[in-house]
Length: 460
Image (cartoon, rainbow, N blue to C red; front, side):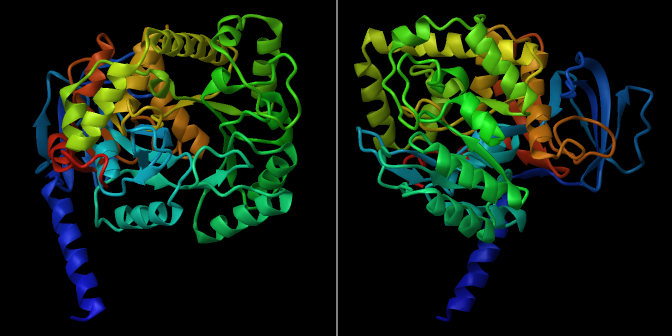
């Protein structure tokens, strides 16, 4: 059989699968009697009408003020809330293999579906271990051959000696960093991720090469402090204060120091050293990504989470979870509370906070589900539901330079929306009740997407 024939058959099969997840795709759609949280930070509005036409929002407003075109397909949704599609800013297509093995398995099949089912319509990967696969998946999604969010692909990790997984290339100097950026930029990556053992010289070279192409650099740093990275021109910092080592006593240049829970506990967010760092990040336009969910080692155990995992992956996860000592739970709680305190201070000072899932760690954070959980944890830490949704939607779009297209609900914008049963503005846990996800005006059935990945996480 000819390879070309196989490719045609596969493409047709993928397109057919995509169609099976679509719940509504009429040229004109009217969502009526819905509550709207528009993503701008404005209060929710009840009994609204949203008209979608040709993939865009044509109108949104009070019932009676919006004219519904003849022939529109109407969805009457009196007990539902519509929010902008989430803009996930720390996503991956890989997941830990478990049992202490430092290898991460690519999930090119299950994760795009999990993201979309959970309301994530735009996703920036924050580092890849199979970047060519990530780019190929993005192409399949863009061509309509497989369901998933609009993807912005970050290349593999800019890391020095000391990587915890053999899947990462270790840089040998600034020239390696420059070549790395230029190679992956040529192949289509749109951002880059500096990692824990990079040197200042390597980071500077990577930033210079990326900025020359008008691309951005983010970082999960350790050897380089936040203020140092900001001075070098980094655009985004992942995870926030709990990974910043610059205030560690005896911190050596370009060296990732050992840190303890006591160091974090004693860190004063309101103190001048942290406040000075916050001011410098804001002055230099550096965003921070909230990934609270990945630091929560034992979130509430949900059936939907277990259903998504393969039987062996579920067994590995539950066994490891049961073995966690009490001290681990205490450190996890400390990390979440200290980080959300920092995030509130950063936002209060005028900083741009974005959000993402980071489906790594001990496996508790899963694609899509962890994006929702991150919003819940922000609210648990003092943000209002409206503020948390604003961070997870509009702020991400703003960082990506897409706020004129996505991230909020307004006429003329792309119809990227999540239809949620309930009211997350008064009960944030309702953020998990995503029923329909519109991407470019096409409504996907969340339940069908989730069902399609049952038993697949941990495999592909």
